[in-house]
Amino acid sequence: MKKEEDSIKIDFRSVGKPFNPMMENEMDAHYNVEMLNKFADEIIYAYAMGLNTTTIVLRGEMKNEYL
Image (tube, rainbow, N blue to C red; front, side, top):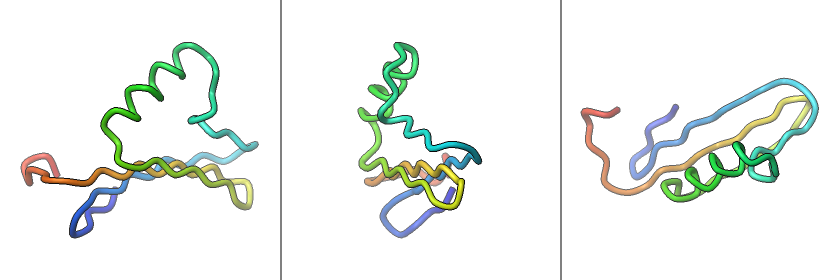
């Protein structure tokens, strides 16, 4: 997790074959993606050198008590 001036970025990483959670069709995963899309301002997926990285960006007013 990284706090920037106007946002928070959360990275999830895993080693293995390419897996973009935003493209998952399984019902449970689809529900999770829908919920994530409701509160995330941006979701970025990348795959490089055997590493899956999904970054969730949250912007807006944030309370320090949660950081």
